[in-house]
Length: 82
Image 1 (cartoon, one colour):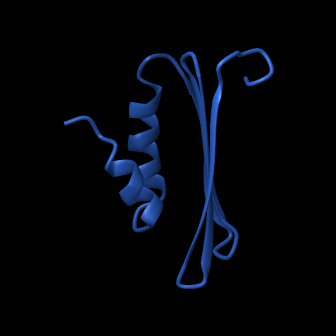
Image 2: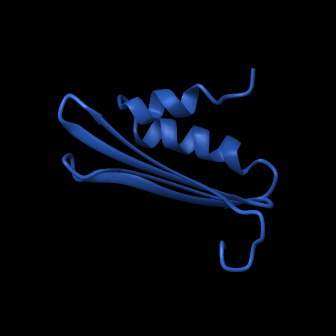
């Protein structure tokens, strides 16, 4: 995605809470979206790739279900349209 897209936004974030490390990556490029969440200490995570205008809405729904009970799910749920 990023190789052919000008104006791509990339956001890396690493958080450490209670000794746990979580890495989140977000890529936004004209309707193409990528989000990666990884918790190496728990050996779990999720990779989501979407395209289209409603891509983030899909990521929010899938991510909150797949990673239920994690700070990442709370973060995603906060992005729901009201």
